[in-house]
Image (tube, rainbow, N blue to C red; front, side, top):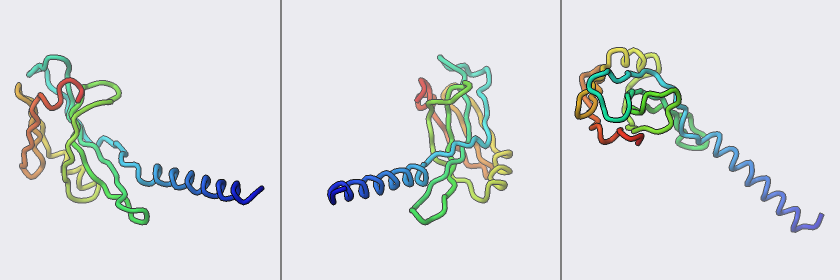
Length: 136
């Protein structure tokens, strides 16, 4: 093997392993649904029934750091596999058990103009129906 091929192989394998490590370690989405609320029959939106879910995601902030938990509120069409939807990152404090307990105290109210998410502390977040209708 001449010297050019040797360096090509070394560079190629290093690049390959760097890509594999980045894809594995820095993947941004775990997607575990912690709780969800299905839209009631009334109000009825034009195209589908929707559901609001709280999803846990994990993120690594650096190569040698631990993964941090983040939470997102997702509003999407009620179907077997959720593919598209409207996401909003939302902060919950504590470990997974504390967050799960807090979610049991949360509520969701569907209205003709959109949906309200009310967390365990009383904070309210409104999603206008235009932000999630149509599979966004």
